[in-house]
Image 1 (cartoon, rainbow, N blue to C red):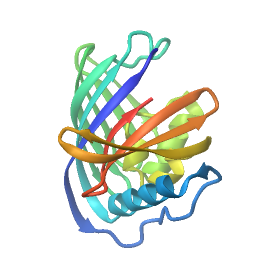
Image 2: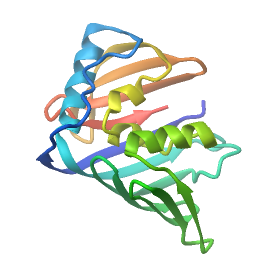
Image 3: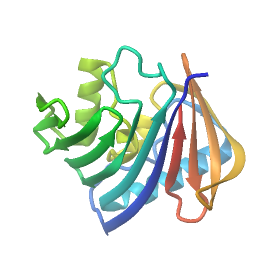
Length: 202
C-alpha cells in the first residue's frame, strides 16, 4: 500500500493573535463526538498563535507522488507569521529546497537544480493554498495545519471522521483520528497534552 507520512514537532508558538478566523464552524462532514472535540481543541491551539515554528519530516512510499515533482522524503523547518507570511527550508531526497510566501508571491527555490519559480498568490495563507489547489491541483504538505482556518482546509471533501483510540508518537500520548473522503483515507495524531498535531498519514 502506498502511503505518505508526515511527522510534526511544533517548536514554538508565540503571541495570541487577535482577529483570526475561528475554526469552530464545522464543515459538512460526519464526525463522531470525540474526533470533533479533538479537532476543535487542536484548531483553537493553532489559531491562538501568531507565530509558529514547526519541525517537519515527510516520507512517501515509492510511487505515491507519481506524476508530481515532489520528493519522496524531506525534512526541515517551517515558520509561519499569521496571517500571510511563511518560510520553509527543506532537505529532500532531490536536494535542498526553500519556499517563501509574503502575501503576494509564492517562491520555490530548488538549490540542486539551480532554479526558482515565482507564482502570484495574493492574500492570506488560506487564499494562497486554495489558489494553488485550483491552479495546479495540489496542496503543499502541512499547509492545511498552518492556515488561519486549519479545520476548514483539513475537512474539505471529508465524508466521515472517527476516533480510533490513542497511540504514543515520539513518546507522546496522542488521539488517533481516521478520515475518509472520495479516493482518499488519512489519519491524524493529536497530542492529548498540548493538543498539537504530531503526525499525518495519507
